[in-house]
Length: 118
Image (cartoon, rainbow, N blue to C red; front, side):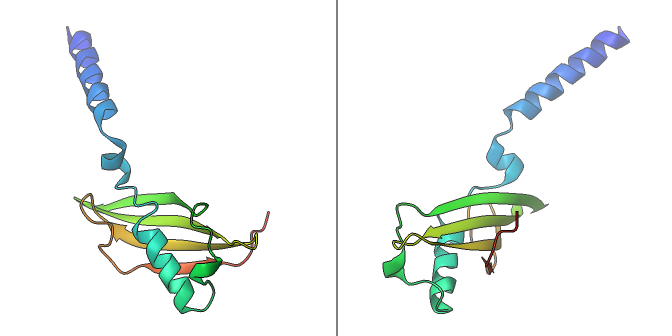
């Protein structure tokens, strides 16, 4: 009987975990929104990127990490890649806090990736 109860509890637990949406586990995916727009603005303000140079159809934003820091708050890290019309790229790491309702819970930190070491 104890074994049956244990199996039943494990089965129910696995079903509950499987039904949790990825956004609830990893936080909101703000790709293409706040981290992209704010990185673009900061790179422009620093004189590293001009809007006319960017091929916006190729811009990519990938969430690298998301850590839950509160009941509805995640600390997130994104890699934003801007493709220049001339063929080059400008990459930035964007770090900020987000919730399921709002991607801009904190100021954003933007770091320019100057070189990839492989």
